[in-house]
Length: 175
Image 1 (cartoon, one colour):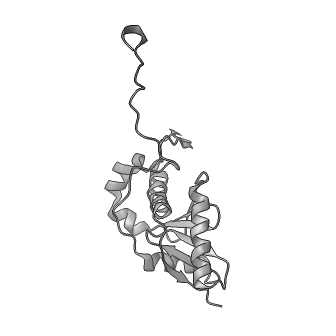
Image 2: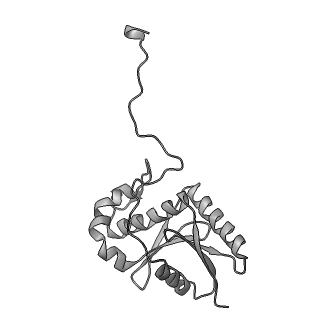
Image 3: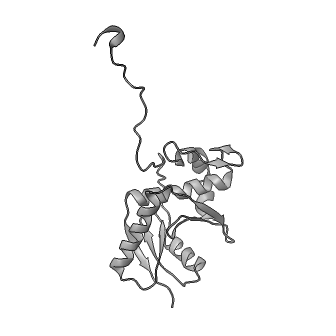
């Protein structure tokens, strides 16, 4: 059509991804051996768990076969990713942060990795928000203290694992 009846183009917006994911994909490699060691410590060696490629952990029912353990871990991560990925970060006595999600999925933010890469974490933390996400904190919407910035950094790895779910190892309980 012409003139006043010409169809208007919608405003240009970035494409919406579903489920929403952060723009930031940190290229900081996490030491999976240390993550496994910390989960073993935090669970007193009493639980089986799976470790994904980027360091996300799924705590498993003990005694599953390797195939069933991998299936269970991937389903748990899928369930977190395809719901609202509520995170419950908590400071651990060793200085790390344990981020718990639903379905027995967790991430660990190692204190020494944070210290080594703090300037990048501080600079990129807003990119760790998922598309159109608003997190309400005591400091205001999407305003984070250092604990919040570290938690967002750790959560990025869960999103990366959820988009490319690959279990690299199954760890068994001590008993």
